[in-house]
Amino acid sequence: MQDKRFKIAHKEALIGVVLVIINFAIWFGFAYGLGSGDPLEYDYVFGFPAWFFYSCIAGTIFMIIAIWLAMKLFFKDISLEEEEEQK
Image (cartoon, rainbow, N blue to C red):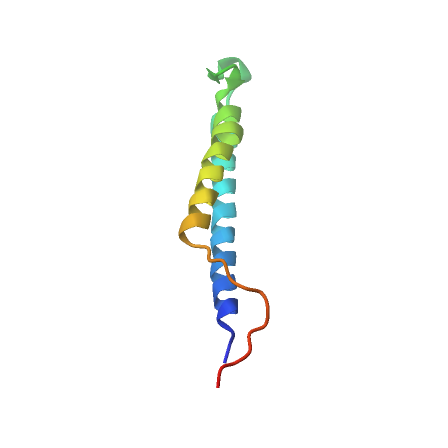
């Protein structure tokens, strides 16, 4: 019988991979979507080019919140010590 901790660890690892893919998609989409034009025509947000602001600053803030929510909603605190089987 497989230890239940492995099932929990696999689920949490999958959530981590999904969060990384979301982070990369946000970064790539804004950096290369908004940043692919002529630099003379860039829009600016708080003094930063819009592609940089949305991909690096707003994207980071979004991911911090997304990771915090994932930790609160999906991750469990489990003991890593070996448990003795109950007979």
